[in-house]
Length: 188
Length: 114
Ligand SMILES: [Fe+2]
Ligand SMILES: [Fe+2]
Image (cartoon, rainbow over all chains, first blue to last red):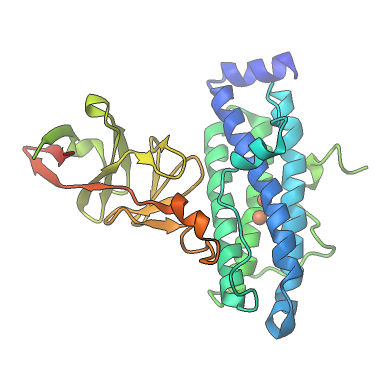
């Protein structure tokens, strides 16, 4: 924890305990989503599934990257991840993205994926609103993640035919073009 | 019938919610599509207060886990729409919010909490 790192945020008028609660819930949602998206990607097979597999993989790796980017900020502000991973999973800020009853039904798969991304967008939009102009570092991290969550929603929603996004696939799986610079513990 | 005075209409602009707790009973008020709605102010998922809940169209969004409820019926919308039916234990998370009858008199919102 950095004493002044926390103090400047408190003095700017942010309730740091409330913010930490939101960051830990967000980190948990990223971690659990990484797990569930692994199962969704594995089951994304067949004529329709193979096309979906790559964007699930991009979103899956980037959600893990979001966890990596959030974690140091939680500790900088004096917070901590729960010691017990069961407790950590329980505080996830978004519902679990379960594999649908019929994994061969790509509409069911896409519905799970797009709703998970929409929940993530709401989460980071809220954190951005809470920190804007006050906690510059958390704001920048949350904004970088928000950029990627908006892209994830767009990938899945355009797969459902809801309209084009203008995006193209990542150059490398889960490249995290926005969040990468905050993954200082993970990237050499 | 036990109507309780909850708030002034102008305290809840269109598309907004307000959390009140008269006599220790949490209620979430919402202004949607020209109507005022009053529902239980506790999310039945994990019993967290709906204080600060955001309204997305007709859906109240719990700030803790983003469970969403139809403001008109109290029914869970999300994650009901993605929870697989072959995992029946999840259904216990999807209990609805109770919807209370509302009347407006002289700019005051009253709800029957009985
Ligand atoms: Fe994410
Ligand atoms: Fe995502």
